[in-house]
Length: 450
Image (cartoon, rainbow, N blue to C red; front, side, top):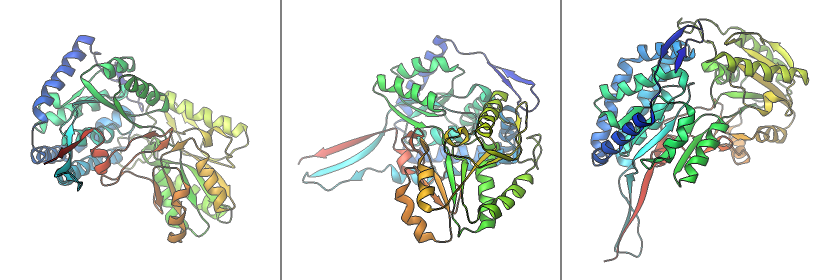
């Protein structure tokens, strides 16, 4: 299994894929470790997570450099990713013990309460776009509740996966608490069906999620899916144009547009569309592209050349259907320049499908009802952003969107204290907050009659 630098094309490293026997050994180690780890106190687990946060921050330059090499993340954004990972670990360490306390419930029994217990070894199938954050978002709460984890990371970020495994060893965990499996996708189904695995979580494509969910369901095992998104940025005519432009640029082009929660569809009220687009285009033109290892770079390369090719095809198909190219549109191997398409309709590929890269699809609307219909026209349901000065009117609209999150005057993002997840083909289940903490628990009822 080889990894390559998407900016230079050079071979970075080669990894030997595990045999079935080696996979079994690692799963058995996880099971053995869980038998001990599950009986540790939440205070001990919290202390360990505090150490993870310390190690993350100590090594953030090294980790950011590896992300830049393997998947082209601009290095400053890579450091930000590591800082967010440390924030999550600190948050879970501070809040987790209280959230996992037994919950007393008054009934007609002498005593009744609920306890939250670990279930065992959880498999995570994780993507390349946030190679540290996605994994920490899984393993930190898993360890907090007493579970252990094994990781199938994306094949192009195996160096990051190795560093993650080393991170937990450096933080003082037993090796079996978190292990990275160097495997191809075709090995995942058998691992899910292994009796040692008790549940699976996946962040990735709809196709991958469907396959993983099917395998888990066949074994009556729980799954959590965080899949694609085509978030809409809805700019009403009373929005603060300057602030909204800045937010929408960040929402679309951060991480070179390679994010499930990126704002991919820009919906503008027709009365402010011309003014907004003048300023939006100017802001996008100011974004600097280049070597992701350079500090001032905001747009790097896409993680693999074939991903840039796919985006180019969606763009060209949409232009052939009547979309107007107003900025960008050029590709050079894995680099895809920041691009804006206007006159986009709901029938076009850049509206209907997930554009996983630096391309904004712009559509105008005349009424709020029309905007709501455009937002909900997507099969995805991860999040939507509304921009307006009328907060009361915006909050009154929240229930009309099917998405898992509504952000007012802000881009959709994840926060340790808030649940994260979608509806429709964006998946099911929740990560983060106390909801995510308990996704992979045995929520056990205890009753004492007398």
